[in-house]
Length: 558
Image (cartoon, rainbow, N blue to C red; front, side, top):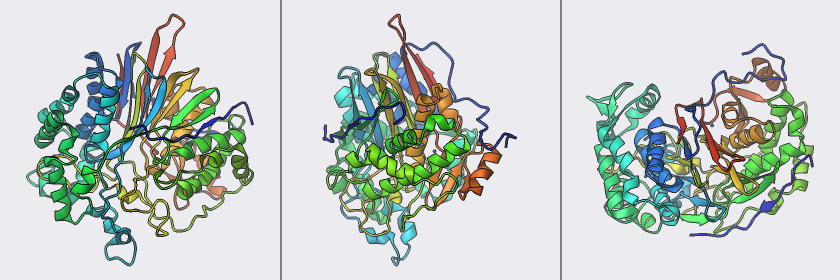
């Protein structure tokens, strides 16, 4: 094995996205990841929206820690990116506690409703495709319960105070940019009358330059500040959710809300290039990200050169192998634990590396795949002066989720069951009633010599673990800065048999990949956010961060 040492931590316990160059080179983005320059020594926030970034900085400036700031960021993203995440959504959160010196995984995803009939998502059920995206696709929202669980365990400021930036943004409104106005216009016709009244005027969607005011959402956040998340998981807000589900024919019910709790888990861990990489364990399906790092190392990733034709072809073929493992071995740990010892075994990796044809792309051979890829997710990172870190991937599933907004609440409900794998019936990623909802999220925290040095993640549905692996190799194999690692061009396997390749990969290289048999599709991949921590000889700490140039976010520090 080339210049690396791998070690797996497998114990799982409950603790609570045309240049004229030679075919072997790439054209990297002319842009750099969005950030504000500065010598930051007191903390860093990177999120997909500047207002959310400023909300986190406001809390840090007031003396809050990273966990406090994360609540402010997540709740503000509900306001300024209402199509991506919020109280009706779910997600995956990695944290690092400077006090304990340990990383933790907080599952912010709710369980599949106990009343789900998985056959409604399959033929010959009438409207089975619609059932996969609408009210019948709503799972138990877990976002706000996770915010409160994180605050109760690690937070330092008053809970209600942390929601004030979001309340202010919702009540006072903010001006829609071209990006968010485009999302609103794309989904507007699918909204009911209630959300149309918020996101439209005179029957037309709000446009670029219009101010979006969300008074009901502001009031919901106030209730959350006063009553805590019990208001959603059994209180009046929960009753509104239950009513909306009954009226629309969804499966989610009050009993699902009342029984929901956010759970803490021990993440999976891999030693790679002298660094300790932590990413979520089951029920998240992040383990293929670590598999890809191990297999690429055995394939000589450093020697292949960054984003050369050989590098990209090898990664594409090995990422299919890891994707197969994801479909085969992802599971609810209450039912079964993925076989991590096998999945992270160098001997197992070697069998996959040996199967790669260096000249020809192989078709992906796993029958019955019916799934989807989502860019309608968001990721943020935050670190404070003490070294506490939160790296969170949060989502509604599809764009504005199920498009269902319970009366009076101001927030949308997810459609997370859209991302189940429905064929063959009964497979591990089917919509099993009452089981934990599995995800592909891979928020990651990287340590060196026992200290956190990077935190990053991205949205992108089933492309997430591929993009995160590429960013980590950019950092640790190719010596890039966090800005360069995030901005650098990506590829991703997309089922059933497509290779997504960003336009910034040289046209000649894209053609060569197609000539090898890859079904190339040009598209962007992910919208990452990340941060880096440098420990200086004088004992001070310097933070840097980056928000993906593919999006419109902001990285900024104190």
